[in-house]
Image (cartoon, rainbow, N blue to C red; front, side, top):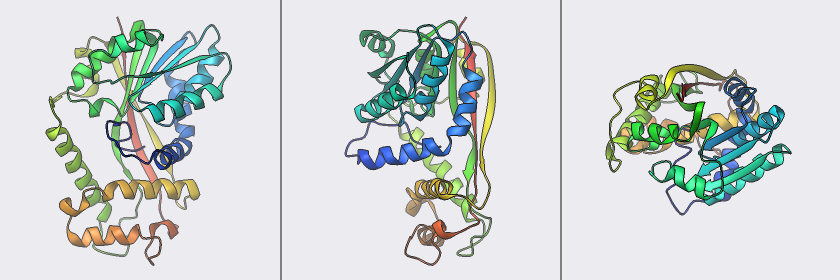
Length: 298
């Protein structure tokens, strides 16, 4: 799961390539997402609002599950990026019949979020509101949780997915550079994230854990569960692609955060023409843990 997959305020994106990457990531973790949706969606649920479209992989699973619940199921997908909304809406609509799928262009950081969803003709509240890897991008995360809680029907739930344990794909010694490369890459990634938060306009710290924050946002009975994305070596083609996407993400800003020797080693691992290309290794694995935090609207 990409660490920064739902921040879409930037321009000049190669959307075809971006969507291709997001779709591949969705397909790779689909079995895990099916399990998560199965734990979150209750038999009586008739409506879901998903904040952050991605490429629509999770939305498609919600669509299938909601359609199975019967009634008049409603799925609303919210994002700021038109291209992602279109792709996600199409994928969710194709996934199941008998469900109304709406896409709404709106920003989870804006106080007008609920009004914009309502103005788009979508239900203003849902039985389940789901936001994966979205809230950590909001300047004021507690205010963001309160905003999302407004979208939940009384008795419904807000589910927020955030990072549990950092993704690991490499053996401890890759044979180039100093051993322990991945640990140093992950340390640099954490530095990048904290700097991103510190430099964000209007950033407000959230010095409590997510369940506590959800209770401060007016939700009750906050609970959490984690799910593993666990693929052992040797990886198949989709697994190798996922491991390479992870390494490519860790390459961002590596020049200023890492020792030059580690940057050189990482570049060698990412060079398809080189002898040390990670895509040719049979000892890559993929292990990640994400945590789902759930709060109930009184």
